[in-house]
Length: 331
Image 1 (cartoon, rainbow, N blue to C red):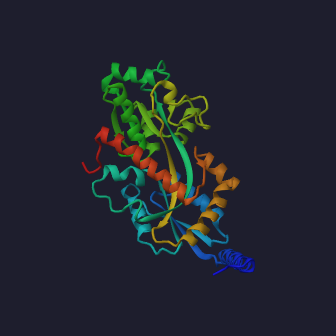
Image 2: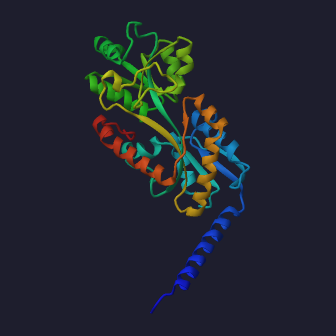
């Protein structure tokens, strides 16, 4: 059976027409009446603030006429994830979560009530940030860097402690790994958030705090604490005069975190594609970028596949580290 040039051209024409029609159908899809953006943390915190800035920019748009933020706090962010996992897969419910709940929790909970990969579909990255390690007035002014601090801890074992936003959080593990590196028992004290930990530090009740770098800036500027290190691969744009952990000799100590957006697992691909496009616009808006920068966050979007790959990489990174620490949230 022979195929003529005319047949080929006709087939190509039909293919092009179908492609154009598909694009037009996508563009003409009616926007949702409302998009619900769910966070697992209380109003006023970093996670909530990101959601509200995105909500302001994603509506009204071709994706949704309005966007509302719903706070489903509790269980360290798990309640929100369970809520979204069980929501209709129609693109009307969007989860925003830090990486820890998806990449670290599977390693510290024996029975996690959700599967980060099977129960959720990635939409886009939202923001990235580094951590900082700071000391307060309990630590002498002569301590100017991490090696100094670790030496001081060795000389003062009863005072060798640090606070973090929560037990099982990335800042908790960063401090613990620093103690293991130096061969000292650096005692961890978990708080409900970074700010309560910082208040105890600047009040002289604990020696140091490990937490998101943006949480320290106002206190450092006021001279109430000293930022000794940042955790990224390079110096943070929010603390350019503060050396990284690897600059101070802690080889391999590069740790950052991100906030990502997800929908229920069975959400159709075309809906995820539309939502991703709308989210990219919202995250690129100057008001979003500048607003997140005020909290020490870098607004950053991605494709769904890029977010999936990032979660896989971080999950694999933390598995052996948490095993070496021996921490379990079920204990």
